Image 1: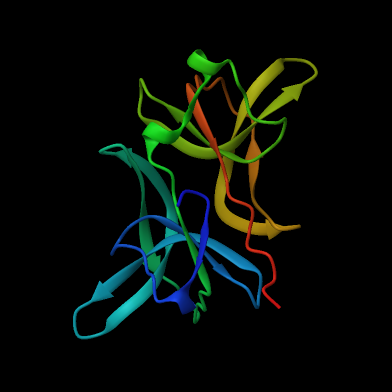
Image 2: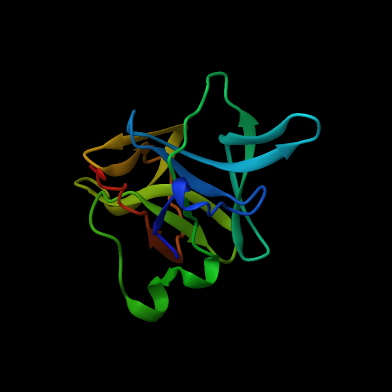
Length: 166
């Protein structure tokens, strides 16, 4: 089910506190976050506070309750690290400037970013520079910047957002 969006009307929900993509078909908003349970309060969709890390072969994120009412119509699992594309084994890189998951298996570094070409430097990895995630033309986007040399060993594409179901 990697990169497959699940409509919550199916009654299928993610595991509690599992890092997932969340989407609202009406507002076209997208978030990284999770579904959590608060005792005496019930179930809530939470959003990432920008801290993303790898642990036990999975991508995890710290989350916070949103200040506004979040309406989630779809959710999508995040890939496990074993599903990432190894650059060393395949020689494959993402499409130039495509936002992807980036991972270094030696340091356990994980983030969103892109592989891009800078005329005065050459091919580099750019990393997300803030926690803002947004929808642009049906794709998940983040702002990235080049701030040093990252030794990325693996990567994985992001899902396209759900198409209108009308």
